[in-house]
Length: 298
Image (cartoon, rainbow, N blue to C red; front, side):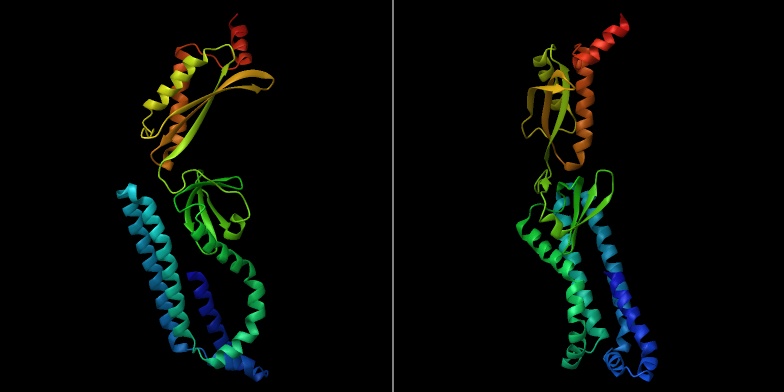
């Protein structure tokens, strides 16, 4: 937004330089429009924009430090920061407009009629996204800090703005999603405003293996994981599946982590621990894999 305001001020400066030439060519309306600009206030507006940018950067740094120090309040701090940044933008924009233009009925009549249709077409998608943004804030399908899956993207919501939602994926990519797109598609939220989240880990065994022993080992692995949130239950699901024309046993261990950022470390920790335990108890993967091993050692 700071860049847009600076671009607007640059445009006003260009109009000031071009005003004499336009007047000489018979363009009195443009000259009249330029006359309603408060040129003395443009310099002050530049300082207002620069000061606002520095203020936003300072507050963002403070919020990051507080989030690191008070991890249990991280989601609340991020939510407050989102609303605060939005209101700072509004206040800065109102101050800049008030300083740079002489707002009266003549200006509204001159500018409003000229730009109404053009702005209407240009801002159609933006207005739709802004209305969708208000709907998201009220309906709350997800919140800042939630881990969300949308259109093949999976990550943490870092900003909910009036125009778009920004998601930081697990690959550390920042994805920007227009608000009106979110309302027309299915969105999956993993934690729904809470810090803890359920994580599933799946492993496969041959159909002739002791799945009851494997179930117990997987449960113990989740129970002893340093990332597990033990205030919520651990569930082990066992089912028979077909993998590439092979019948196998699929074990899915579902446990909770205390913070969404531990999702992948938890899954990796449980997978490694369970595989080590299976190997120690001679529990083998689906038949074709261990049969090939037996043939190679024969």
